Length: 311
Image 1 (cartoon, helix red, strand yellow):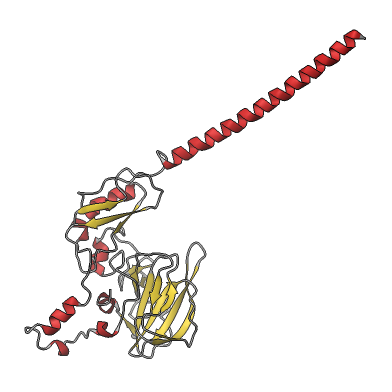
Image 2 (cartoon, rainbow, N blue to C red):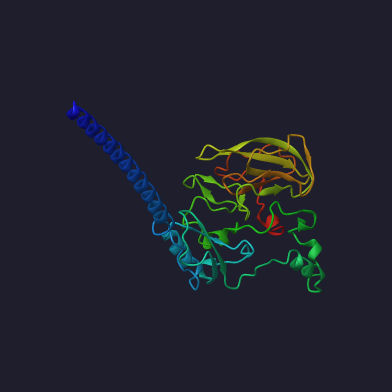
């Protein structure tokens, strides 16, 4: 009988030891998991994530190549006005943000400032100078009227990319031969279609407010373009009296067909495309084009010069 009691105590002791060992194993596994997760996090935010290369001192073209090799995106400071500057790729980068060596993530935008490009644009100053200059006595009879006095910009601030042909090709943001250049008349769909608008990239990106450039009446609101992500963007066709404008690639707008919009009133916000697709048509147009194939539609206008005067 005594032997049986000792045996029972021994069995109980062994069971307690087994439970303790199982508990120790569980605790060790939990600790190992925590350490592994922590190390993975450190790897992700250090050596495993893209590092910003040093691009100051390089030309914009060289900087763009180096940034893209790091799987990042390069953007020009939105405070710099590059719309009228040619050969941006030859200008030197004098400042970058973030600095070289910073940890980022794939697709992160490195913002640069270029040498010789002013940080601010004196809106309207050149127009006033021309209007008062004695050497321009026939300004009023110029064949290119200046509607800027009665219009406002559709975006806040300056766009982050130029939208004129020469500047957008040379800025380095789009690869040579791109089918996504933002200028009016740019090739699309393997050169089978022509871009019927200018694409304006507000500095605020997605959600940036888009304003009516002039008083008008909303003629049409409809889905315009569906992104690969499935997001449906919208076009808002507005009759401004002496011309009609299509503010497109927007989030579902708050205005309605028949709404009267005031100059500067927000008519929508930029979608995930991060751009305003802006089309201009002759007065009396009731719908936007279904595509510019071959000959340019007779009612389609080039809005480039008009928008340049406003931004």
